[in-house]
Length: 463
Image (cartoon, rainbow, N blue to C red; front, top):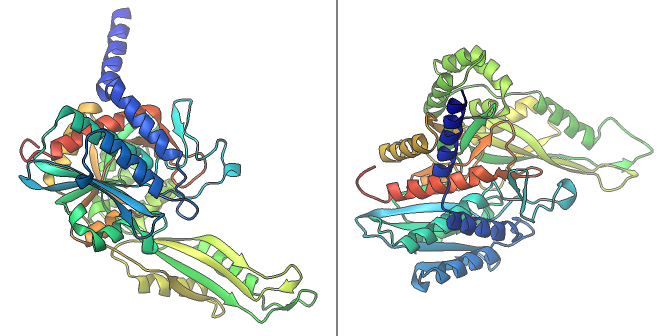
């Protein structure tokens, strides 16, 4: 019995050692990660330029020449970094993308300072630890490692760290680069955020590869009114109209449906997940609406995978404590299935609201792109490396519920795959939320995974 126990412990230790980079590479990645987290790059109050400049300095110190490094962007505070690692040129380049801006975070909302890199209880805490500074740190650390090892790929490897993925608009780094510096990032395909490893019940269940995504539409619900003195209230109150509209929205669910990617995802989940939901997952791939309904109720992520979603995210209203409101408005953020149109979503919202006093209009530009093809060499490489590092864990194609800059690349003809190798508890994913964190072990394992994946995909043969 003791012998069996010792062998089991030794096996676990060997597996852990095999998934970890060398100590000096771990330290480099951690140092870069810390530096990135502690530069305040919130998309409205921060700046990405110090990040681009700091990473450029690290790359120059590692031997990259100025001719292979670009720092620039739409405005001085929204700089992007693009660096090229030269290969033989036998194949078109591989683009490695990560964004360096983050969603805003307030100190009073967190248990730690969100812009301080904290290691505690087996996790790294800080805004951007998940989204998306872990991948940015790993791309830079691994590129320096390739340089040190004199790795000679069959294609150029391009790393682009970009601005304003979270904020979008005129300063979005990928859109700006495609429009103004396409030659710097043009590639056969791209690896980006948007796919991650799933943990359920403490067990790794899949390494997900994003091949498609929803697109984002923001609607403004707006009610205007003549107002008046608060001592003489009337039923026709702008805030009441808006409140009724949002209550009806909160009770509504768009129709449940699948597409090619999500059918494949749920079919594979049926082979992975145990318990009562297993049979429903299998029936979803066959189009069972009853099964979709039951599965949607078990998980917010699965619910969002199966339908378009719209949710109120911001409110404004009133101009004085003692006046009837002349304006009440809300931002409603919709994540829309690619096959559904803006017009369909807008008309559906109007039917739900059923109040002519509530004006509903789309706000801002809307972009959508096609799914990426299921490139055999990409999935073969991801599957092989995943099974080597985490035996028995399958690789699963997914459509993500959120949005990434892969949207713009796909629309521009550069297939993009969201893949990271960072494993996260699917019931405790903290993107954009309080106390965002990344498992220390998962960060380093992801560093190894991405190191091996890029090396594999940078060779023309052997994938």
